[in-house]
Length: 328
Image (cartoon, rainbow, N blue to C red; front, side, top):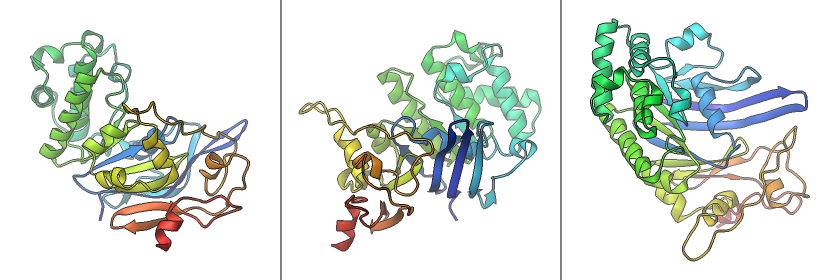
């Protein structure tokens, strides 16, 4: 059984303008010890997927249907008290901007001690010793001093390392990293990504790496899920996805990567409509004035481990080049 199973997850926001279907039929598996990358544009649903798994859906949002199974236990519908026994102990999250996520009026030590006490049920003295050891593990020099620092006294890279320490101090089996390097310069990004890899291998934890950087995903992930408008459109081992992209959206993302030969090709505009289209949402991206299929795209395995959302042609709009690949 996979460590995490997300099955047909539908997350909606009810607004005065209508229902926003942020996630519509999301399906993800994460095996123990693996790194799964989730890529897509801003607004595609990457972070909302992470928040759903963490039980941190905004008050205006609601999980309409589906399951989130962690070690076989369904997390949908848990009370906040029940969640406190899971966050930090079973699953934890590294947020996008550490200095905004960390409490500016509490020391790093008090925050890591709180996380350790909550997750492990140990005394504060033990938690402090564990916190110092964990800060040393994530590469922070003079961890005793850092325990007494506030987040605004740390550099961006040091704050991100402190946040990683808070995420792993409870021994989580699943770590979700939501754009963990987006606010850092390139040299620090590489250090943080190496740290995440080393921690995953050392602790045996699974990692979900959410990023908009395809280069980061292929270098650091075992598999990559491409998400568009709240739906997975392609899922494959990282190298396989780059070697043989099939869905037109994946191809467009790869074509938009900067290269010395060309500036990159535009991938079009995200068609934001309330309510959004049902069924095959990428149809409006390819042909904005075309008809939209009412059917949900099925994931078709075109080679071992390589799944692509595939629909029959509707009103002359090919759902993806997978149709031709499957026929061959």
